[in-house]
Length: 221
Image 1 (cartoon, rainbow, N blue to C red):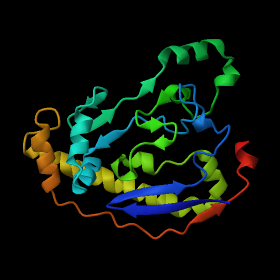
Image 2: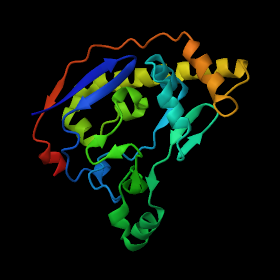
Image 3: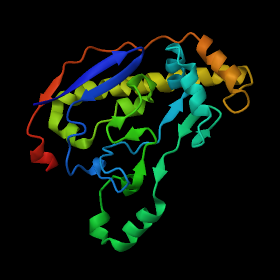
């Protein structure tokens, strides 16, 4: 028996599914990277201002400073993106040598088969969930969505609500930085101080019941 549950700590949500890491032949987990057990960790983490605010609220400023100083960090005015591996040559060879019907994956970008998150290891993500951007914590593959069926609807609504919350307050923080004429490029230290001192209301999570499902091989196999 597998299950999907909802965890919410320190203004950070997480969909917790014990089927993750046990999948087989699921499209999103297909990996042509050096790490065959990558799972769905092809996302390059993008830390928005609200993600940074949540992490600062935990007293983890040092982690944000580490991100800013990583050689693979792309620092924008209002977000930090940590670039991972993308094997462009293998991707191009794959497309060149594959029949068209073999690379037709509907709405799924096959480039993701060749991408690897910089925080992904053979045993999973090396970051605590409170240090991840919210898309990482709220992502589920379409196999799990199909297995959960209609029971997933409250989870979907909670995900949309949290994304809306993040978008709204991300803009609020951005305008505050603009008012102070600073950003993460021009003055990261001052920006972090302003973000940390802002009063942002916490998201109000719903109580979601666990979803139990079984026989995943009927869909994933």
